[in-house]
Length: 283
Length: 330
Image (cartoon, rainbow over all chains, first blue to last red; front, top):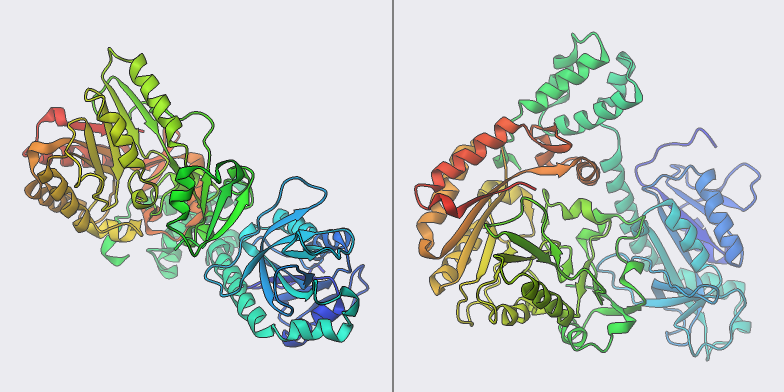
């Protein structure tokens, strides 16, 4: 658990049923982890994708999201995905929808997930219920996990990194009692291409965020040569980020090679910034 | 293209809401209780939102007009500002709005009528003072004019009070409602400008400087009073040549009789705000500039600021009077 790789893109799936997850497990080549865990957890070899089977209901969704976060050492650039089947009084059986509003019985206020830009997928308002609902007339989408997943995931990352997708499995003309395991798997399978397309956006998003927040190239190297306090480390990181834009690694190394203390490293870098005349024609 | 528009329940039937929604027939409309449910909540990523902002239509409850901060003025004894909108369609890297809100979505307050009441009240309470109002402190005052019609609305108020000045500050090329209206001596159309080379890198999504100058020239010729806002002044290689070229280009291409004022402002960020903006855009060339902490603000050193301001001021004095020049120091 503590020797996890730091990956450039990072996806975490929270899915209620194994039948809903199977297609995802197959496509992304996710294997069960070799440890006993509270909820079943799967990951790919690169450890970029992790998936947890949370079971039905809001409590399970909330607990498993938090559990996967801790277990997989998710970062703040990790994208969180919840996919599953949902009832609907409005959409067509088998269609995939993105969720951009979530309501519950328990709370007056709704929550508003972001959705990926320029998506060709339709969007709907999700109602998360604690009990199965057979009256579809007042809700666009009905599930039993979405709100809890979103509530917890939005504490772990920015809401732009969270995505809820629902495939319509039941409604006024498709009795909930007729849902079978194989029907569930097929509903997800038939939307796999669309799901992959959505996920590729979140993989890119995660990777771009990683590049932005990743430590500057020389940071660890410099830190290993001189002793920096916490405040100095922050200062060093900030200065290196700024200098890397206009100065290559060799020049930075050359500038600081004779420094005797961390303070003098910072002073040298600071002077470099002070003397920099931005060449605006380059940008 | 605005993909999603959030609308507060309370203003769903407001005429301005209907007017605005009518312009976005393909957008998804989501009803909300209060704009705070979407805007400025924690755990939002400003940079990612900025790539595809949503629109929020809301009702403003109070603080319609506020006193302008010290150092923000163009000669009046009393300065006030109002913002019918939060956030901007442009993405200028030096803009304080990046650090101000955690959300990049646009909020438009549709209850213009309440702005009118507050503005009139302030005018009536300050009959003995020279008063200037500034539109567009928390947004660009004209960039979404074709959507909101706010400037057109507010002009009708100021037409009744010719002694009260109003400045619209903008980078937009929006010429209406000004081209079709009779020029008003108390209205200043103020344009933010910097050398094209710098603007190309820093004024993301904003119209080019040459296009802005062309609009300024047209509106000045039509009789509207123009403000030129070189704020912030940006440092870098050949800055003197770049600013000389810009200033001469402007002064030689606009009808100077209608030039109301010119102001110069330095690049400054409150420390906390700089930290937030730098975190969002750590690889931006602007932050490779010689910026450091000076008097609790991140700015160029005072000698750089003074050299730039006096260079631009001295050059401007060849074309305009000293009493037309102001320093913006917030």
